[in-house]
Image 1 (cartoon, rainbow, N blue to C red):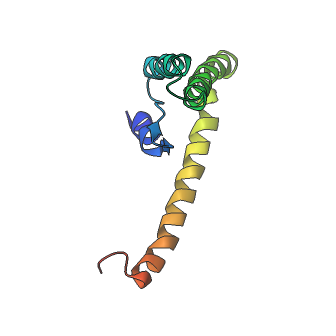
Image 2 (cartoon, one colour):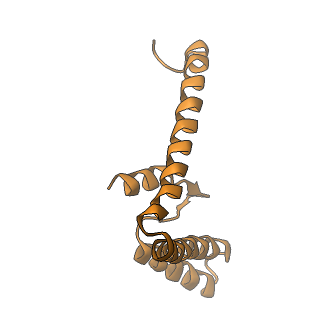
Image 3 (cartoon, rainbow, N blue to C red):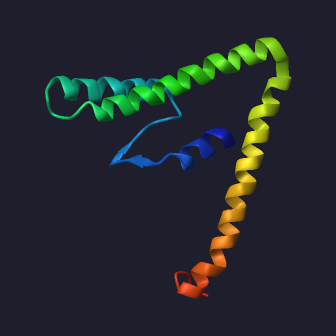
Length: 110
């Protein structure tokens, strides 16, 4: 639940279209919808390509995770856990550095 929440919080809008990343079926649905819009000449191919890339990333990640687990067992979790720890520390550091600057600009009440 924590990993899915972090993933949802990290997702950004891509030109007004939120690319789903939590559920593979939702991403495939979005891909199909955008492909249909492209076929009907209602949209460019870009939105469909973004959904396709999102789905491909999920599929490749699932495959890589299955392979890593088959080779390394539970030790395969150390690489993603380490990456999450480093990204968390980097994000926290950037947030703490930005806070004093935001107070000086008057962005936050204080």
